[in-house]
Image (cartoon, rainbow, N blue to C red; front, side):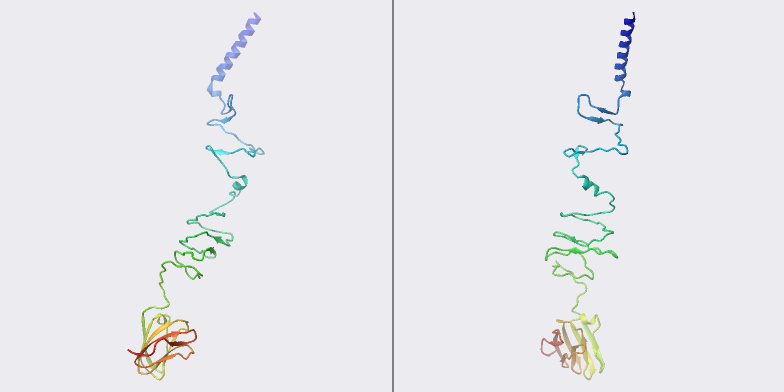
Length: 256
């Protein structure tokens, strides 16, 4: 009788175990595949690494995200730690569009075959651009900057040093005419009236050319300040040029 009770107890225990294992509510969210080589975290499960613990992927192993292996090294990933804003550190060809460089010291930014659409200099910060080729093209606007050995493609000159405008002066007795900032850009200078030996004081700029039309009653001299210059006779017109020392004749006096 005792043996029958023991056998019945064992059968009840086995049946209860099978029924309990079949109940999905007791399934673990983290499990090792039966007959497999994978540790699986099911939906709703998680793996936590407590303080002092670690997950170490040894050489030859890989970390994947959505099936794609992460190829960056730990050192490369650590470079991202603590960065803010836009940071560019590269030796390859890169494109920066509408990026702000702030803080730190930016010494030399070398661009390979660059095309510059806008060169912006913020107050107190300087961006130094080194162009590697002598025939680089600068597109945009440069203000109070110096370009050396650079090619300007289809430039638009809005404030030229010479124009085809005419500046005129009526001499009072014994006075000279010192050209103003706007008058010195004119190509044709015309004078009337006057007495004595009036002069036109022109800029000391080598290569500067003027056409002087003298309608005054006396000879008029075009010269540098303190120079000797060239006198154009009354009723005559001549082309004069600064040769780096003073104004000289390009043409003889001609009746106008």
